[in-house]
Image (cartoon, rainbow, N blue to C red; front, side, top):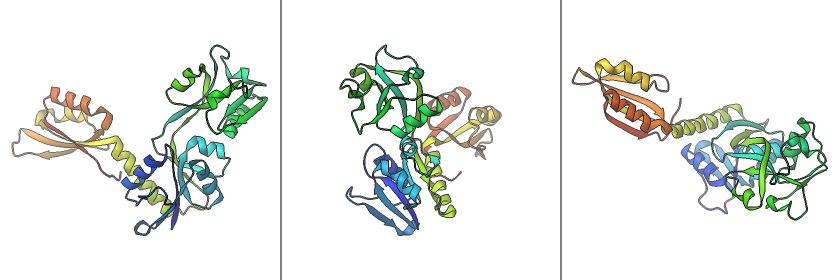
Length: 281
Protein backbone atom coordinates (compact mmCIF):
# COMPACT_ATOMS: atom_id res chain seq x y z
CA UNK A 1 0.00 0.00 0.00
CA UNK A 2 1.39 3.38 -1.04
CA UNK A 3 1.56 5.84 1.86
CA UNK A 4 0.99 9.44 0.76
CA UNK A 5 1.47 12.58 2.87
CA UNK A 6 -0.92 15.48 2.15
CA UNK A 7 -0.78 19.00 3.66
CA UNK A 8 -3.32 19.25 6.48
CA UNK A 9 -3.67 23.05 6.42
CA UNK A 10 -2.48 26.23 4.75
CA UNK A 11 -2.45 27.29 1.10
CA UNK A 12 -1.30 23.86 -0.11
CA UNK A 13 -3.98 21.83 1.63
CA UNK A 14 -7.19 22.25 -0.37
CA UNK A 15 -5.56 22.44 -3.84
CA UNK A 16 -3.60 19.24 -3.08
CA UNK A 17 -6.72 17.39 -1.94
CA UNK A 18 -8.70 18.67 -4.92
CA UNK A 19 -6.03 17.44 -7.31
CA UNK A 20 -6.07 14.01 -5.70
CA UNK A 21 -9.87 13.90 -5.95
CA UNK A 22 -9.64 14.72 -9.66
CA UNK A 23 -7.10 11.90 -9.95
CA UNK A 24 -9.69 9.46 -8.60
CA UNK A 25 -8.65 9.17 -4.94
CA UNK A 26 -10.76 9.48 -1.83
CA UNK A 27 -10.08 12.49 0.37
CA UNK A 28 -11.18 13.41 3.86
CA UNK A 29 -14.42 15.26 4.55
CA UNK A 30 -13.51 16.25 8.11
CA UNK A 31 -10.43 18.44 8.65
CA UNK A 32 -9.82 16.65 11.96
CA UNK A 33 -9.23 13.36 10.14
CA UNK A 34 -5.50 12.59 10.15
CA UNK A 35 -5.39 9.23 8.34
CA UNK A 36 -7.56 7.99 5.46
CA UNK A 37 -7.38 4.59 3.77
CA UNK A 38 -8.48 4.35 0.13
CA UNK A 39 -8.67 0.58 -0.25
CA UNK A 40 -9.99 0.74 -3.82
CA UNK A 41 -6.75 2.41 -4.94
CA UNK A 42 -4.47 0.66 -2.46
CA UNK A 43 -3.23 3.90 -0.88
CA UNK A 44 -3.19 5.41 2.58
CA UNK A 45 -3.23 9.18 3.12
CA UNK A 46 -1.62 10.94 6.09
CA UNK A 47 -2.56 14.58 6.65
CA UNK A 48 0.51 16.33 8.05
CA UNK A 49 1.96 19.80 8.54
CA UNK A 50 3.33 20.98 5.17
CA UNK A 51 6.72 21.78 6.70
CA UNK A 52 7.02 18.24 8.11
CA UNK A 53 6.11 16.30 4.98
CA UNK A 54 9.59 16.26 3.42
CA UNK A 55 11.03 14.98 6.71
CA UNK A 56 8.56 12.09 6.87
CA UNK A 57 9.13 11.20 3.20
CA UNK A 58 12.91 11.43 3.53
CA UNK A 59 12.91 9.18 6.60
CA UNK A 60 10.76 6.55 4.86
CA UNK A 61 7.82 6.92 7.25
CA UNK A 62 5.65 7.67 4.21
CA UNK A 63 6.54 6.88 0.59
CA UNK A 64 5.56 10.10 -1.20
CA UNK A 65 4.03 13.46 -0.37
CA UNK A 66 2.86 16.81 -1.66
CA UNK A 67 4.62 19.89 -0.36
CA UNK A 68 6.26 23.09 -1.59
CA UNK A 69 9.63 23.06 -3.33
CA UNK A 70 10.76 25.72 -0.83
CA UNK A 71 9.80 23.50 2.12
CA UNK A 72 11.57 20.51 0.58
CA UNK A 73 14.82 22.42 0.08
CA UNK A 74 14.65 23.96 3.55
CA UNK A 75 14.06 20.60 5.24
CA UNK A 76 17.48 19.11 4.54
CA UNK A 77 15.62 15.86 3.88
CA UNK A 78 16.78 13.07 1.57
CA UNK A 79 13.41 13.23 -0.22
CA UNK A 80 13.56 14.07 -3.92
CA UNK A 81 11.31 16.18 -6.12
CA UNK A 82 9.44 13.84 -8.47
CA UNK A 83 6.76 15.89 -10.25
CA UNK A 84 5.90 19.64 -10.30
CA UNK A 85 2.16 20.14 -9.78
CA UNK A 86 1.61 23.64 -11.19
CA UNK A 87 -0.14 25.28 -8.23
CA UNK A 88 0.86 27.38 -5.21
CA UNK A 89 3.51 29.18 -7.25
CA UNK A 90 5.69 31.71 -5.41
CA UNK A 91 9.05 33.43 -5.69
CA UNK A 92 11.62 33.83 -2.94
CA UNK A 93 13.47 37.16 -2.62
CA UNK A 94 15.64 39.27 -0.35
CA UNK A 95 14.14 42.55 0.82
CA UNK A 96 15.36 45.53 2.85
CA UNK A 97 14.43 49.18 3.53
CA UNK A 98 14.15 51.10 0.30
CA UNK A 99 17.44 52.17 -1.23
CA UNK A 100 19.74 50.41 1.27
CA UNK A 101 20.83 47.42 -0.84
CA UNK A 102 21.23 46.77 -4.55
CA UNK A 103 23.06 43.45 -4.82
CA UNK A 104 23.26 40.24 -2.81
CA UNK A 105 27.04 40.67 -2.60
CA UNK A 106 26.31 43.30 0.04
CA UNK A 107 24.91 40.60 2.37
CA UNK A 108 28.36 39.59 3.64
CA UNK A 109 28.32 40.04 7.42
CA UNK A 110 24.63 41.01 7.55
CA UNK A 111 21.86 39.57 9.73
CA UNK A 112 19.11 37.92 7.69
CA UNK A 113 15.69 36.96 9.04
CA UNK A 114 13.71 34.23 7.30
CA UNK A 115 11.37 31.29 7.80
CA UNK A 116 13.66 29.20 5.58
CA UNK A 117 17.14 29.32 7.16
CA UNK A 118 18.66 26.27 5.46
CA UNK A 119 17.45 27.34 2.04
CA UNK A 120 18.95 30.82 2.55
CA UNK A 121 22.25 29.52 3.94
CA UNK A 122 22.70 27.09 1.05
CA UNK A 123 21.90 29.79 -1.50
CA UNK A 124 24.41 32.22 0.02
CA UNK A 125 27.04 29.51 0.35
CA UNK A 126 26.76 28.80 -3.37
CA UNK A 127 27.33 32.52 -4.00
CA UNK A 128 30.34 32.68 -1.67
CA UNK A 129 28.56 34.98 0.78
CA UNK A 130 28.85 34.59 4.58
CA UNK A 131 26.14 36.33 6.63
CA UNK A 132 26.74 37.33 10.26
CA UNK A 133 23.61 35.40 11.27
CA UNK A 134 20.49 33.84 9.82
CA UNK A 135 17.61 34.32 12.23
CA UNK A 136 14.73 31.87 11.95
CA UNK A 137 11.24 33.32 12.38
CA UNK A 138 8.01 31.41 11.93
CA UNK A 139 5.98 34.34 10.67
CA UNK A 140 5.70 38.12 10.17
CA UNK A 141 9.26 38.21 8.82
CA UNK A 142 8.74 41.68 7.35
CA UNK A 143 8.72 43.22 10.87
CA UNK A 144 12.15 41.82 11.80
CA UNK A 145 14.11 44.82 10.49
CA UNK A 146 11.97 47.40 12.26
CA UNK A 147 12.29 45.44 15.49
CA UNK A 148 16.07 45.34 15.18
CA UNK A 149 16.32 41.57 14.77
CA UNK A 150 17.84 41.67 11.28
CA UNK A 151 19.27 43.92 8.56
CA UNK A 152 17.61 42.07 5.68
CA UNK A 153 14.80 39.55 5.26
CA UNK A 154 14.36 36.65 2.85
CA UNK A 155 10.78 35.58 2.22
CA UNK A 156 8.21 34.34 -0.23
CA UNK A 157 6.91 37.19 -2.39
CA UNK A 158 3.59 37.04 -4.23
CA UNK A 159 2.45 40.58 -5.05
CA UNK A 160 4.97 42.48 -2.90
CA UNK A 161 2.22 44.57 -1.29
CA UNK A 162 3.04 43.35 2.24
CA UNK A 163 6.69 44.33 1.79
CA UNK A 164 5.80 47.77 0.46
CA UNK A 165 3.45 48.35 3.37
CA UNK A 166 6.39 47.65 5.69
CA UNK A 167 8.62 50.10 3.81
CA UNK A 168 10.69 47.34 2.20
CA UNK A 169 11.75 46.65 -1.37
CA UNK A 170 13.04 43.58 -3.21
CA UNK A 171 16.65 43.61 -4.38
CA UNK A 172 19.03 41.22 -6.11
CA UNK A 173 18.23 38.00 -7.90
CA UNK A 174 15.52 35.56 -6.85
CA UNK A 175 16.58 32.76 -4.53
CA UNK A 176 13.99 30.32 -5.79
CA UNK A 177 10.84 29.85 -7.86
CA UNK A 178 8.65 27.50 -5.87
CA UNK A 179 5.44 25.57 -6.46
CA UNK A 180 3.70 22.51 -5.10
CA UNK A 181 5.59 19.33 -5.94
CA UNK A 182 5.17 15.59 -5.51
CA UNK A 183 8.20 14.28 -3.64
CA UNK A 184 9.38 10.70 -3.19
CA UNK A 185 11.54 8.76 -0.80
CA UNK A 186 13.97 5.97 -1.53
CA UNK A 187 11.46 3.33 -0.43
CA UNK A 188 8.62 4.30 -2.79
CA UNK A 189 7.40 1.33 -4.82
CA UNK A 190 8.08 2.21 -8.45
CA UNK A 191 4.95 0.51 -9.84
CA UNK A 192 2.62 2.17 -7.31
CA UNK A 193 4.33 5.52 -7.80
CA UNK A 194 3.97 5.18 -11.57
CA UNK A 195 0.17 4.89 -11.21
CA UNK A 196 -0.02 7.97 -8.97
CA UNK A 197 2.27 9.92 -11.31
CA UNK A 198 0.25 8.97 -14.39
CA UNK A 199 -2.99 10.05 -12.70
CA UNK A 200 -1.59 13.39 -11.57
CA UNK A 201 -0.14 14.02 -15.02
CA UNK A 202 -3.60 13.27 -16.39
CA UNK A 203 -5.07 15.96 -14.13
CA UNK A 204 -2.42 18.46 -15.22
CA UNK A 205 -3.21 17.75 -18.87
CA UNK A 206 -6.97 18.01 -18.30
CA UNK A 207 -6.47 21.38 -16.64
CA UNK A 208 -4.20 22.66 -19.37
CA UNK A 209 -6.23 21.59 -22.41
CA UNK A 210 -9.83 21.58 -23.63
CA UNK A 211 -11.45 19.54 -26.38
CA UNK A 212 -12.50 21.58 -29.42
CA UNK A 213 -14.91 20.40 -32.14
CA UNK A 214 -15.65 22.32 -35.31
CA UNK A 215 -16.81 21.94 -38.89
CA UNK A 216 -14.67 23.30 -41.70
CA UNK A 217 -14.91 23.33 -45.53
CA UNK A 218 -12.96 20.41 -46.99
CA UNK A 219 -10.61 22.66 -48.95
CA UNK A 220 -9.67 24.51 -45.73
CA UNK A 221 -8.81 21.46 -43.59
CA UNK A 222 -5.05 21.89 -43.90
CA UNK A 223 -5.27 25.58 -43.01
CA UNK A 224 -7.47 24.74 -40.00
CA UNK A 225 -5.09 22.02 -38.84
CA UNK A 226 -2.27 24.58 -38.94
CA UNK A 227 -4.29 26.63 -36.42
CA UNK A 228 -5.10 23.57 -34.27
CA UNK A 229 -2.27 21.02 -34.62
CA UNK A 230 -3.44 19.27 -31.45
CA UNK A 231 -1.64 17.29 -28.79
CA UNK A 232 -0.58 14.73 -31.38
CA UNK A 233 -2.83 15.17 -34.42
CA UNK A 234 -6.50 16.17 -34.92
CA UNK A 235 -9.24 13.68 -35.69
CA UNK A 236 -10.81 14.45 -39.08
CA UNK A 237 -14.23 12.93 -39.87
CA UNK A 238 -16.50 12.97 -42.91
CA UNK A 239 -19.84 14.76 -42.71
CA UNK A 240 -22.99 13.95 -44.69
CA UNK A 241 -22.22 16.99 -46.83
CA UNK A 242 -18.92 16.05 -48.52
CA UNK A 243 -18.03 19.73 -48.83
CA UNK A 244 -17.38 19.81 -45.05
CA UNK A 245 -15.25 17.93 -42.53
CA UNK A 246 -15.59 17.61 -38.76
CA UNK A 247 -12.48 18.20 -36.66
CA UNK A 248 -11.88 17.18 -33.02
CA UNK A 249 -8.69 18.34 -31.32
CA UNK A 250 -7.13 19.24 -27.96
CA UNK A 251 -6.11 22.90 -27.65
CA UNK A 252 -4.52 24.90 -24.80
CA UNK A 253 -7.18 26.16 -22.41
CA UNK A 254 -5.62 29.62 -22.10
CA UNK A 255 -5.69 30.09 -25.90
CA UNK A 256 -9.27 28.90 -26.44
CA UNK A 257 -10.89 32.17 -27.50
CA UNK A 258 -8.03 33.27 -29.74
CA UNK A 259 -8.18 29.90 -31.53
CA UNK A 260 -11.96 30.10 -31.88
CA UNK A 261 -11.65 33.58 -33.42
CA UNK A 262 -8.96 32.39 -35.85
CA UNK A 263 -11.05 29.38 -36.91
CA UNK A 264 -14.15 31.52 -37.43
CA UNK A 265 -12.20 33.99 -39.54
CA UNK A 266 -10.87 31.06 -41.59
CA UNK A 267 -14.37 29.78 -42.30
CA UNK A 268 -14.94 27.13 -39.63
CA UNK A 269 -18.37 26.92 -38.06
CA UNK A 270 -20.11 25.14 -35.15
CA UNK A 271 -17.01 25.63 -32.99
CA UNK A 272 -17.64 23.95 -29.64
CA UNK A 273 -15.44 23.63 -26.56
CA UNK A 274 -15.68 20.92 -23.88
CA UNK A 275 -13.73 20.62 -20.64
CA UNK A 276 -11.64 17.50 -20.12
CA UNK A 277 -12.38 15.79 -16.81
CA UNK A 278 -9.55 13.25 -16.95
CA UNK A 279 -6.88 12.13 -19.38
CA UNK A 280 -4.06 9.75 -20.12
CA UNK A 281 -1.60 10.96 -22.72
